Amino acid sequence: MALSLVGPLRKELADSLSSCRVLVVGAGGIGCELLKNLVLTGFKNIEVIDLDTIDVSNLNRQFLFQKNHVGKSKAQVAKESVLRFCPSANITAYHDSVMNPDYNVEFFRNFQLVMNALDNRAARNHVNRMCLAADIPLIESGTAGYLGQVTVIKKGMTECYECQPKPTQKTFPGCTIRNTPSEPIHCIVWAKYLFNQLFGEEDADQEVSPDTADPEAAWNPEETAARASASDQDGDIKRVSTKDWARSTGYDPVKLFNKLFKDDIMYLLTMDKLWKKRKAPVPLDWAEVHQLGEGSQDDMCGAGLKDQQVLSVGGYSQLFQRSVETLRAQLKEKGDSAELVWDKDDPPAMDFVTAAANLRMHIFSMNMKSRFDVKSMAGNIIPAIATTNAVIAGLIVLEALKILNSDFQQCRTIFLNKQPNPRKKLLVPCALDRPNPNCYVCASKPEVTVKLCVHKTIVQTLQDKILKEKFGMVAPDVQIEDGKGTILISSEEGETEANNGKFLSDFGIRNGSRLQADDFLQDYTLLVNVLHCEELPRDVEFEVVGDAPEKAPPPSVPEEEKSITNGNKDSAQPSTSTKGNIKTAALAHMRIQKFLS
Image (tube, rainbow, N blue to C red):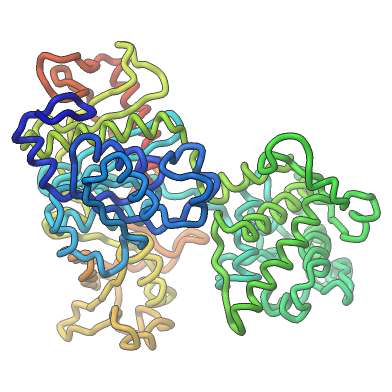
């Protein structure tokens, strides 16, 4: 008998654990707990992949990492730490993205089981498709504060990760971000856009200057232009590229400050109608802020943890200045035409967004936020609880044991709730749902209908926003079903780039046209039916017919007979399907969609 975290295992199962190969995707909060559990349960052949490096903010819960590991590969350090628990284990670590083409279907077929410990939807979608293509069981998991979920995905037997629509990440109208922010998140989104406009890849959809096309702003540009007074010395408000203007000033922090927080705000004030029922913003001037004595170094320190302090306006103006100077130096070091990529774990980038967002919050009369709070919102971080991760990691192993014991019928979706249900249970097991016959991923012939205007939609939008962003493809090839086999998009570099700026109608695509999209890495084919529509709602480029992203899927009903721990009929009973329990499971299911997205 082999001893494990779950007690003695039958010899056949213990032998199976020591010989099978498993893949763990993610070495963060859940991943650290999971890797430890796997080796202590008897798993010997483990491969782990994670693209991230260790940040100091990880150390409070990702116990395999220590302060001296900061900046190193999560996967590699996790491997080294876990081997101290079980030196005989054979662990391979990959410091890489699971979406790298090297990890193809054949790579996934090397494993008997895949376990996800991820924190983003794109990677979850991709692993889901790779496991479907390889026909390998996948255990999916996620946590959000005190909430958690574990579920099992098996091709043809259960719902896949994409069978039910997930809530889309909340977006905000451009005019709200640019003209009339009313919540801190609006200012944080604006600051992230500003980072890209100044230092990263410019995106026309992420403009930060005042929006003169705001439907609320009924104003006369000829009359108000003179009132938008901005000095030539501090950089005026000419409608030029934000990056080009910043370069012309040498990324001067003072000129940037006055342009963004004084001149543009004064320009907004000329849009009289916007402020009839709102409190008008109050411009900030660099010289005035520092004349008030708010820019001293004392503003940068105080009681409590540094990241949880809320600084003064002067403190954030200094943080803005220092972060701009640091980012300017990084750009210069990279050379001409270089671009920076915003990362919540990059201190100068996070400092810039924190400072810019808080200065804008102050201008629009909102309470400013600490760096910790801004990072949580800017990085879409859900507060992590170490004990939640530990519980979920344990449940992953229990489901893995059922699969390897050929006891798939005992596998469950298990919800971890914040409060006990009426039967005083925190853990609620539910039967696994059958595949959705209309799923655009795991159906026998995946097919969708997309409503768009063929005269306004360009090929680049089809590739990036529809196929990659919406439908999760990595490297799509698209062929028009026109009897000629016209290739619209090729994943081979240089073959179809000339098509990117052309409209779909330029290729004869019209209402009723059908496009075959293939992703050979994912071994996935999707048939796209085009539904032409001349006019779509404002700021909407396309719609997926029948898609309801804001509607959570119906909850499964907890079972009456099966154990939440190991599936034995004679062990503790889970909740029954009383009204109270159904409600509890429903609430958990709806909450879970937020962090499994």
